[in-house]
Image (cartoon, rainbow, N blue to C red; front, side):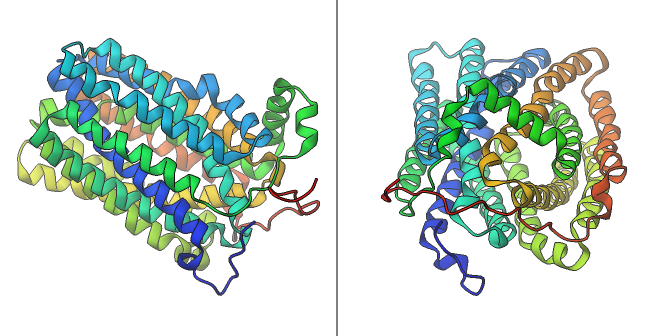
Length: 429
């Protein structure tokens, strides 16, 4: 582990800065694609509500298929090669979009396939990337590190969305994706430049089968009272949020007559809310405790969907939606950073990857079903009625956390004992 003493700024920790920069570049590029792909599907390819939900389904299906193996691989192998390989695959896959457009063969079917490939590769890369952080920094710095990553994630998302709106207007949606391709290559270079030797995986892990390791991870998560409670809350939140996000962009572009610039601006304002949340989370948790902070954030989030439901086409409606999204992302970032730091702190080192992957498998595994349910509901009930239904359902995560043992958690739990110093690269076994 590369040391970062409590009194030393993480901005002077070179490897953390490289890791942080890789996250920023990756998210900025994804922000461009986040504007471009909905416009390709809805505007260029004239996708129906059901076809948009199928695209969302394809993007959200991989956690059910690869999350658990990804976690076991992250604990079994060194994490950086997995991280770097995944971003290279994503960059190569997204390069197909502008090339297919230039050849005149861009289609919804191609977008479905690319959504599956890039989502799976992203998951295989993000699992070791997130679980790598406790190996890079001492556990007492994790909340601070996650807050800083949250800040840059939101800023990069803002920049990417704004840049995406501008580049789409200038070059077209398909060619704008080239920026995301470049961001993946830059991310790979930054991750490859981290100098700290990575702790070697536990040699005993390779003595058991991948299936056994996966089962151990699931059992560990289910039996751990703190992680289990956070997982149930996260599952409820992710499912409802996936239901809403499947259709809100379609509603904005069609019913509220939004443009690429409007979409990019709204996503940027939302991401700025994430910046505020990331900057505030450490101070809020120190003052009020993690349980109270998460419960308050989850209680506010349903209210932030109301401006979208009441908005009418035009600037006034767009300002109201932007305000709601700003507060929504601030609250989401606060509760997300807090629960992630708690899970990282209480999890034993050899289970970090499998803990994260099991959580993704269960939590994100609800998203494909939520996307299909949103598509069916949007087709049968209409977009507004479906979004109103999802807004009411956003109360569920708050109720789940309120009835769990986490409601009385007044501080981030201490880290579990580490059995001994791990073997690192360059040292004799």
